[in-house]
Image (tube, rainbow, N blue to C red):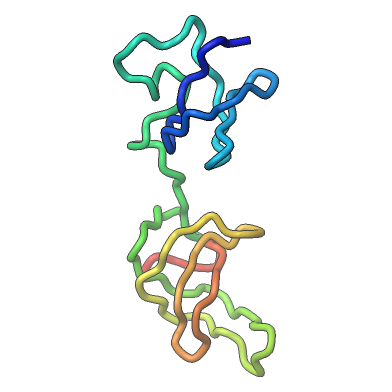
Length: 129
């Protein structure tokens, strides 16, 4: 058991607690493994076993393997059925200004499609334009 628990590396909350081998923040829910032997000054995020914010972003690739980023334009590669709509989204529909999100069931693109409105798409059904 650690006597002086470190503050949360994400939100700097002081009220962290131990849960088995992890340290947990009650405010933001972040969990991490504390460093062996404690952290003396310097880079506390690296010492706590938390990866640095830069360079650790999730990579999302389209159906042909191109890396997607926020703001990209994509083209739908196969026809998609849309619940509640008599016609779906046709293959070849261009979608501008996408936003990458941690969606549900693999839906990792948040976008607005003309004629349909806001919706989420899977990266496996689009190709970078």
